[in-house]
Image 1 (cartoon, one colour):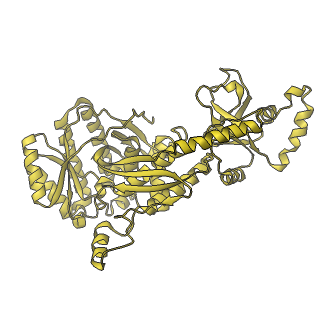
Image 2 (cartoon, rainbow, N blue to C red; image 1 turned 30 degrees about the horizontal axis):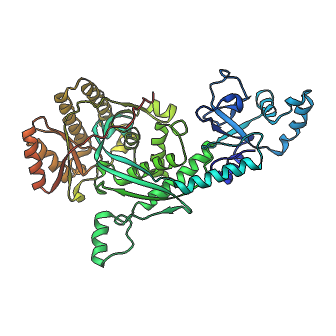
Image 3 (cartoon, rainbow, N blue to C red; image 1 turned 60 degrees about the horizontal axis):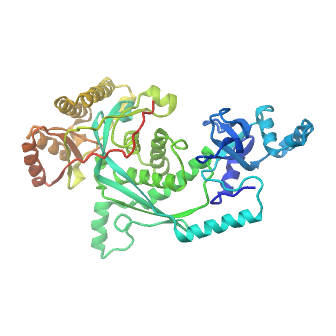
Length: 498
């Protein structure tokens, strides 16, 4: 008998079982202090989810696995005959247990048995009776009344591409930085039914007048954030089902907020940030760990929500830096991407960073069509484009070295070269007069400058504090928004994905 603190989605379990040609065993991760010698322990292949080994109450040190199989199994009809075979082979009554049966079935008979993880704790396993259940039910009922579940709130931050972009979409290398100036925030609260709350500005359904509708639609567009919440939830459930993670049967209410200017794609529009923050909330709510959804795979997940569910053209750089946070070096080489599905992502030292600044257009209507036909030229093997993408990667490696040595004049030089290289293959017509105006304005004050993303904004490095103040005034007089960048540092140290 078993009892979890929440019921799990049995329909999800059945779907996973039907998708596999084998038996199914539910398992969970042992809690701290819980000994493996009291449980049946499984070793699971992370790719196929097949249970490679079953150990019935092993002694300490026999296995490094902390995955305990509970008494919940799905067997195919044709496997039932193995029960009689097993019992005939066991002369001792004490060996005729279900745990020993699974140990024999998996280790000796080599039958395909797949595992599905339940991200929750178990309180009642083994010899328990009605009084034990009554006690635990009363305990959790009182607990819920005394302290209702606290809201889960997560933020994802905008980023600026400091070097290498736009080569991230061409198997290149980039360095990007998350910034505290702009963010998207999602809040999840447990509720009786699953509710997605519209944002009062981004998801309006009521307007003061036709003129208000016109102005809001012109500035904010037609597509709000509700579709992002819904698409992320759908993809999350789909991912967990496919990856063999049984979710607890809990409902919630989601709402979001963001201060990222929708029209400035250089800052990661709210789309990516809202998806990223929503995923963080879902992971916390359902106790999904780093082992269940590692950072490199999480970046792929966010990208897939946008491309598969929302049909948005996007690349990995923005998603990677939002997941890792801070200053991140990224290598998207073709070999890495084909071999393992993600690149090499390395957090860089953020101590003593120089002061970067950001400027963006108040009216981004002339920010240009940045990507143009460059991708097709690259796919066609056009020499200028192919060599440019290689040079972007080289600039990124040189910038990584400059960050390491704190050589900020060198970094400024590389930022200028990054822009001129981009300009040479995209042309002024594609970059747009608005972007070029901001670049020219920055250079009048001796500042290094480049595009931090697809368009509508510029990022710069000015070594002269006095000229920085003058430049800010000039940008504002030109109708642009100007601010100093506040780097966002990750709350925890991040390990390389190598």
